[in-house]
Length: 398
Image (cartoon, rainbow, N blue to C red; front, side, top):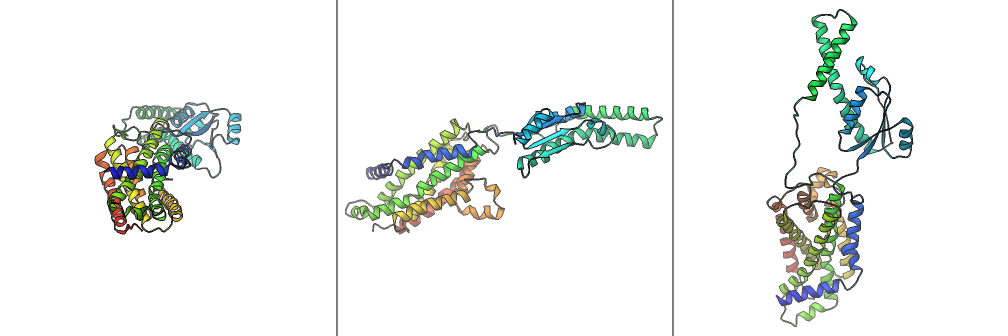
C-alpha cells in the first residue's frame, strides 16, 4: 500500500510541476463552462422579447395580450408604434406584432382578426414565438367566438331571428356564456415535477456544466498514456525491474494518482456549477459518487490501454487531446445528443462519454438517484474492466 501511495504522489507532483497544468485543470474548464452556460444564467433561461403594439385597445386585444403573457418563454412588451419600430430596427427583439384598430369588430363580424407580424429574417426565436405563443394565444381567444358562432347557426336552423338586433343580442349572450364557461372549465392537463429535484428541464447552464466536466476530466485521464510512455522513455520502468515492485503495484499507483486528481477536478467543477451557476446537481450524494468513480475509472482504463500501444510521449499527448475532444463532442458533451440523428446516437453508445453524459444528465436534469443510475454506472465499469484488462495484458516495462 505504501508503494502505491508513493507512486501516486510522485506522479501527481510531476504532473503539477509545470504551472501551465493549472490551465487545463481549472482555468479552461471554468471559462468554457461559464461561456457556454450563457454567462451564468443558471436555471433561468433568457426570455424572448415579443413587442406588441395594441392599436385596438378592446376587450379582445387585451385578452390576447394577456394570453401572450402566460407563456414562460416570452417577455411581452406592450409599447407604442414608434418604440416598436426603434427596438425592432435595433434588433432588441426578434418579433413585432401589431393588433390593428378594428380587431375586435372583425372578430365579432365573423371574420378573422388581422394581425400584423414582423420577424427578423432566419431567426429561430421569432419562428418559435409565432408558431408556439402567438398561434396558441389566438386559438385560445377564438375558441369562445367559435362556440358562439356555432350556437348562433344552430339557433337559426331552429327558428329564424325576427330582426338583426335580436340576432346580435343572441350572439352576444352566447359569446358571454362561452367565455364564462371557459374561465371555469376544469384543467384537463396538469404538469408535475419530481419532488426530489428542482432542475428538471434543459438549460444551457446544465449542458455546459455536465459537458465541460466530462470533457476536461476525460482528456487528462487519457493522458495516463503519456505518463506510461514517458516512464518508458526515461527508463524509469526498466529500473523498477530491479526492485521488488510488481506490475500491479506500479499500475495501481499510477492510475490511483491520476484518478484522485480527476475526482478532485470533478468536485471543483460541480461546486462551480452549484454555487456560481445555481444548478442542482442532484440530491443523491451516493449516486453522484458512483457516477464520478465509474466515469473516472472508464477514462483512466482507456488511457492505460492507449499507453501500451503508443510509442512516444508526443504522440500520446496529441492523441489524448484529439481523441478526448472528439469523443466528448460525439458523446453529447458540447451540445445535446438529441440534436444527432437517431442512427448516430445509437452508434455513439460505444463511447464512454455518451454514458457519462447520460448518467450526469439523469441526475442534474431528471432528479434520478443511486438506483436509477446504476445501469449507466455499470456500463462505465464494464468499459473500465475491458480496457484495464487489455492494458494489463499488454503492459511491458521496456
